[in-house]
Image (cartoon, rainbow, N blue to C red; front, side, top):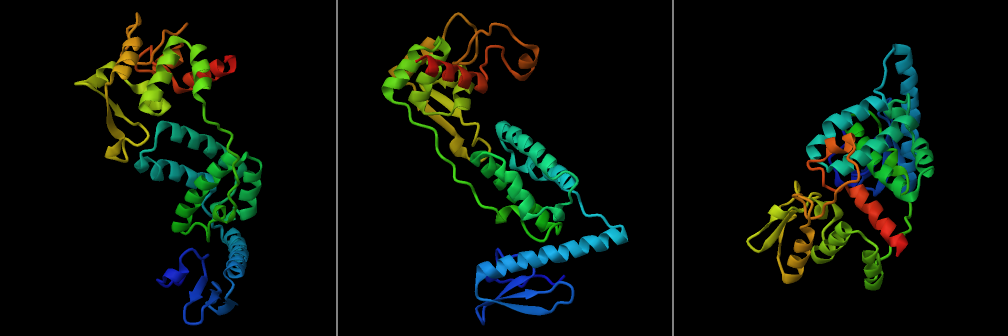
Length: 300
């Protein structure tokens, strides 16, 4: 295969489609014999035609491979490679990896038995159409990255996911009013009131609120390491001056339950599975906090 000429104009074009800067037109190189065809000046039409041709030639190659006994790499196999090789260096958060695992199971089911180069735009679009806009956009972004890596290894001619359209997400979240939050706080248990107060004062994420420890309060400051950006930037290491208002909240966090965490609770019963995932039995899980806040909001 003739390598693509190093030209910025060719960036983002499908395989075998090139930009002729001298004429301002697009041209397609037939992969079977290297013959050139002029595709005019319309980029959208040229890209669409090139993708259709690439798919046709790829299907022809599939027939040849079948006769010769050559097999393309399966999507499931490449996904294993992506999980084991591509993701670890990125040092993604645990929550992100858990979300990816859910999407990966969805991909394996949708493209079961398919080779990487057999997955078409239509297949991807059909799968995405069955999902909610938010989930569809998450899956689309992840698939684009997966197919970019596959294309870089020559496993597919272009990126079928990139040709799909991002869905419009209707924002359902609304900001809490001061009065509304006061009502929620009144309906909350003591530990949740402490979490709400810490969030209002420090403006930190749920994860970082639940990770705050008494030992992090020293020399007049509360030190916080933001988990989401801890490995990406030094900006994740921040501190808050312990004002009288913040000190009052910290003092309220100290109760008759011995815990290293500011926000903590005595569970009604400690499940063995939960105990294995916690570094202390009083630590509150993110999902539990969310459910408790939702319950208090509904009661209010």
